[in-house]
Amino acid sequence: MDEPNSSILTIEKIPVTGSSISGYVAIATINRPNKLNALNAEVMESLKALCAWVESNAEIRCLVITGAEPLPAEEGKRAKPNAFVAGADISEFVGMDSEATRVKFTDNAVEKIWSMAKPTIAMIDGFALGGGCEIACSCDIRIASERSKFGTPEINLGLIPGYGATQRLAKLVGYGKALEMIMTGEMITADEARGIGLVNHVCGHENLREFTMNIAGKIASKSGYTLTTAKRVVKAALNSTLDEGIAIEAEEFAKLFDSHDQEEGVRAFMERDKPKWLDR
Ligand code: COA
Image 1 (cartoon, rainbow, N blue to C red):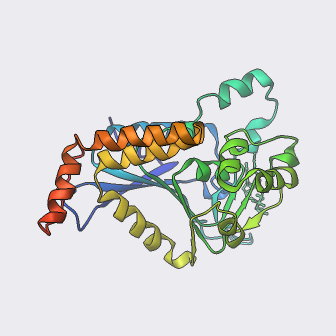
Image 2 (tube, protein in one colour; image 1 turned 90 degrees about the vertical axis):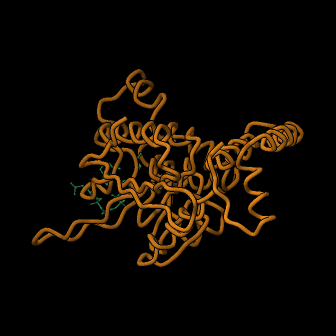
């Protein structure tokens, strides 16, 4: 499958270092800075292609999704603010009816990100609003700069979130905080987002990439087989009772003892060696 690199979604491949793994962390940058990286149909199609490419490409160990930085200000105009993604492209809502909305929002790119087996990280510098907050919630880990702002302002358009925030945001931050964000439409700061569990880490914007790549690199250096098991089992908790989840964990834990990488990990520990993962 061809790399879905385009002017609207640029992909960088950063080699994994310090591990037996020869592979990459892919950084995908949504590139519409003059529209605060708002999600138009073209971006959503590109994100779907990105997910399919990452899942099918054994060299890609971890996906980082981010937004493009603002361009230099045009003469006589103020600079655009920094944004991860300022939401769905509102101009595409004009004249839409329920039928068109069902088509547009069913099986959308945010669900594709959520369904990925490989690890995903949202690297956020600036506004993460509406669909931007929802892309962040559909990734496994969220890392934000100190100047980021989060919100679900759809209420101000007479809407509710449509890319999963009523569910995934509520699972992350709890029913009360999610409803406060959704019903007021107010933004919260990066520090507040960390306080309610919406983001994992907040750091200075000048360190954001290094901080994120440090975590992505650590994850990318592990066994891909074990990582996908870990992700699948933790996510199972969202749809299971505690007893069901514990039973799922017990079975998946046991199955790992038939894998090459479990045997290799234990061998490497016993022999004070570095494990050579084979992703199986
Ligand atoms: N959809 C389409 N265009 C958007 C957008 C969106 N969600 N968010 C921002 N833009 C565009 C603006 O229309 C503007 O375009 P223009 O320069 O061609 O007029 C450009 O991005 C810059 O935004 P602007 O509003 O001028 O920046 P600001 O600093 O004054 O305000 C925000 C920043 C984020 C507060 C404001 O852009 C905003 O409220 N955006 C919408 C957020 C939203 O409701 N998202 C949920 C959508 S369901």
